[in-house]
Image (spheres, rainbow, N blue to C red):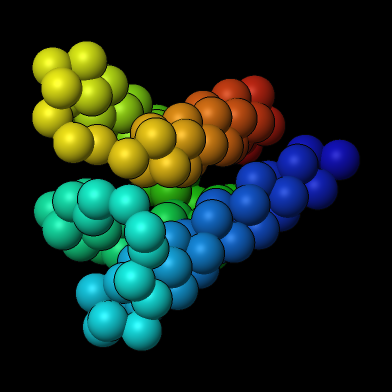
Length: 122
């Protein structure tokens, strides 16, 4: 039963990483031009963290202790970026609500992954 939960958490990490890479790369390569303000640093962050997420997701699937530890760092990093985006938005800096929504989603998924792996670690 423990491995099932870790496998599920690993798959979730891999999938959210893949989605971040695909979406962000399309914007960075000019393939996709959203109709809202793009924060280039945020897109680069998302693609980078997508790569990290895939690696950590594979590590979680393989029940590696290092991956279980890093899951909480990913969740924390996403929460910090979310807070920055909210502060920017409230300060009238042009931040797309889509960016805030996507970072909220990433944060919640990684919080869920972190809770799951901490409850089910070796």
